Image (cartoon, rainbow, N blue to C red):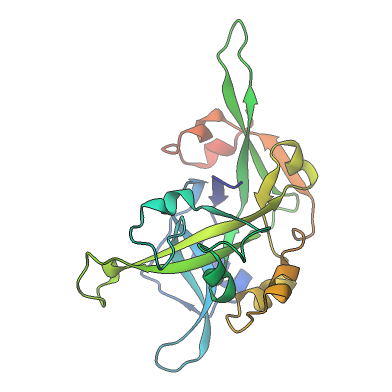
Length: 242
């Protein structure tokens, strides 16, 4: 799974990396070395302009933890942070988004944990590992997004009436990541960005072909500070060696 990740690149960098054509300068997501469920995260997606109908590649914040449009309440979103690639097109919570609302979630890397048994001198604990591409390039994690209408807000034009949420698609772990945890985020290669983001591409087989294997490149894995274990801790010091 992917339950915590790092995303520190700013909107200027992400705009260039992903060919973004529209972003609202008033919407800000601060850099985070400990992104946790329900946090706001940057997402790259494509939607048609309401007035012109022109397809735009947008950079916008989404809440991590997908709330399906048909959900009666948003409370389950914190649990729906991951969608398994093996079943994403079949699960009721994800299949509509898989067909039309796909996104990329930029990350520097992600965390996984291994349990460490207790000894005579120390209690049992979980050792976090930071996993990232060896070349240091951004990971474009495949994601899905949804809009949920809050019935408690009467005015549909009120921004508070709508929740924009997302989930990360995961796959079997490969390379060094597999020694830490059996699952990992599924990252797309740049050559596949256009097809993945285009809402007009709705052929499940073609979309699944993009998700067959993680994008190329080796992964670097290293143990980091156990301060990561507390979601309230945040900062570059979390990536220091354990």
